[in-house]
Length: 76
Length: 373
Image (cartoon, rainbow over all chains, first blue to last red; front, side, top):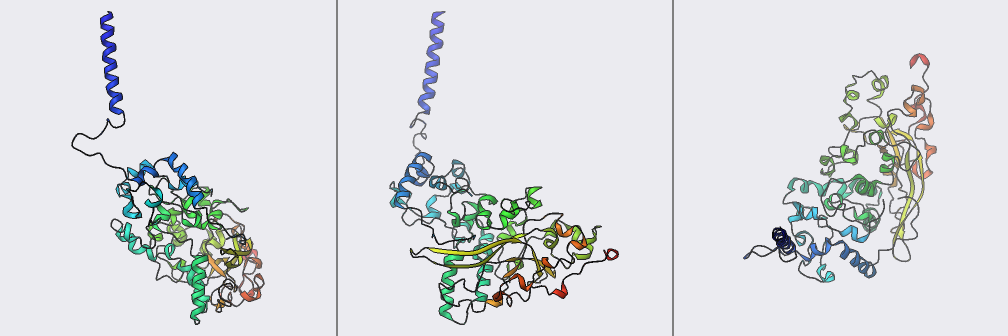
């Protein structure tokens, strides 16, 4: 009975380890001989919310919003 | 409309990257260097809105028909606004016209539309920003149409600002702007139109309310007035009017405008733009903010032909109701002189300009006797 439990335990460990390794970065790469598609810098930056928030702080310091004239009055 | 944070304006969603448009490399439309990891140099030479002024360059390969007509559409060119200004301007003085055109582009031309500024982002006029992570969509009325038409039309249609109920098409049916102002109208070549009401594929109440045109219903008001009154004369409510706008540049070099007053009121006038499409004798009017001193900061007396265009323009207020104060009975309108545009409703310098829309006292409907109703 103990041997049987150990065998099941070993099999499960091997199975889950394989899945974890395969899903790790770099392991789910394209098959040998094929190059993985390279994402452009545009996509990498513009689809990363955290990065965009940090970058927007820098941009707003470098390029403040254009001021509106204080003389504007009434409804447009 | 709440402004967007900068990151919200620029965030690209995976849903866009997996869409058909998302398969096109960014740099193909926007330029820039997709391989440069330095964000500052990578953006050198970038085009924020590659669909203006030439939509064919980036949209034309797939949307050939639309991109041919759309550069001449009224949303693209703002021709009705510029046409009304130039009609009043001193066309015989080239230096004055140059000043007028400069002022127009600086103060009146910032709300033009483009493919990108309706289908991808908010208009630049309100600071831009993707509508939904760069996904292409039918323009949402709250963030696109209202960006430019929010001051009067959108607030009247949705009932958010004034003390009048929202348009029945919105309150009962939640109809979006695009339900009536369809693609065929918005993208149509408007270069041959004398005014915005003359543009191709304009919506008409009668497109849906056919029984009024055929005069087959039992409504005695329609039987009597369907041909001589615009629908809005009986079915719209008071609308917002603006007066005496003038523009200039402040000490810091920033453009400004000053609009002296606004007022919510209702005026009926003679139709100044009668045509096959708008054959009615009487229409609802709205006061435009133009004044003879509009461009004085750029060129004195620039609008020397001010009287060539009325300041009270034919209008189609977007606050329709089935029942209004005017259609409750014949004498709710007949005998009510204050509903009709009178010389006393305007300042001296406007009277000649509005001669064609003022309703003379002897042409206003007199109260009807009970047996005539």
